[in-house]
Image (cartoon, rainbow, N blue to C red; front, side, top):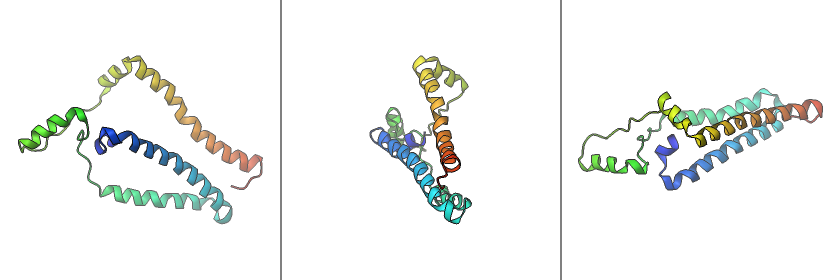
Length: 144
């Protein structure tokens, strides 16, 4: 939703790809730093080090202006332009998803199947990474 409000359609996929890449890179970098630092200065320090960029980002985000909802959506451009041309108050996009709309979305079989096949894939990767770290450290004797 936020990506849709921040980026026009032609840039949105690229920005989502960057976001997804950074999400994966964050896990990789975090695990790597934890593996180097934990044996030297203790297991608590990787958590503290990982918290610093998060706290900085939280402070920065607190000062950002929230984008106008729907401003980058092609289907709403005419409405926004009409309001700007008439110099009226800013038109506000108020559409929200509710349970009735979610049921309508999931009545489309493709949407339902996409959700069902994707949901289980969210859990195993995190579990696998945590398990492998413990397995390699405890059973194989590798340092954290």
